[in-house]
Length: 258
Image (cartoon, rainbow, N blue to C red):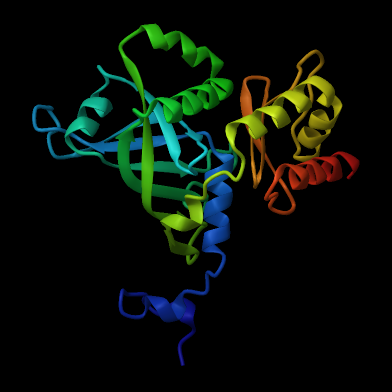
């Protein structure tokens, strides 16, 4: 009998050769720890590339609904495309200096981009986004920038050859358990009183500290916290999900004492 590595894999026999069981976990890890990707939209009829997908680099945040949010100008090609066809994909990939591109991790998240118009929702997203990207606030007065949320429908994760899986939307699209007031209280408390603890979180995650650079917490959800440090964003995962503020505090203290 031939070894499975010598058997040609087809659509018909793919399932019996697929031993990749951690796709959901790996996809969620990538999803939570990345803040930029390639956003592809379908070019509108008036475009020179009508009907073809067009990709562009896009910073994003995962908001309180558990979905990615992008901030884009009305004059941008991708925004004009979205208005005619909301279907889009957000692609993330490994970009470490020494990795082999064919074996690096990849995550493609597909869904519909919807403009955020409800005022209460919009204000929370706006504040959340600008904590992550404070310099983007200057664009409020230029080119009619708007926030669009990617309503996730399906995702595809690849961790290398033979480690490929479809990921259902509800695996990734998990709303924060914290309301905005609770989130802000945790963030403000950590930034006021626990700078040293956040520095420890960073070093525990192999992030080198630099003299005179102060970490700033910008987000928290049940899965962990996001810290802005030296112009970069770092998601620090909890060991266990924190389903309320008390559990979040337990996780933060535990990490500080590790």
